[in-house]
Length: 90
Image 1 (cartoon, rainbow, N blue to C red):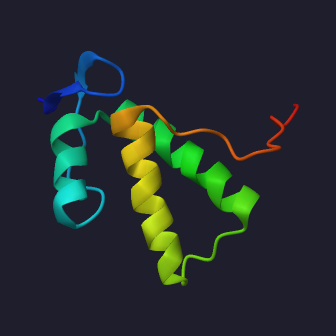
Image 2: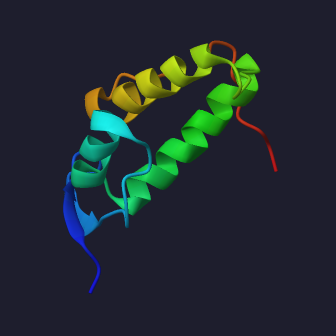
């Protein structure tokens, strides 16, 4: 049976992650309070942030931006799309 969590992002009981997606306290918090569905939403959001700002995963500053985005997107609801972002058309 799937592990269920009350998802802080989606405000409902949903299937939880199989393991912490990142190390440390923030990873533990994500594991305990975020659903698989919300984590997938975050992955798409961060992919957009990475592309818009042309972030380099080898740059240590990207790690800080990632943690900041996790906090803003999943826990505080303050994450915004990068300025000038235009939704792609099909």
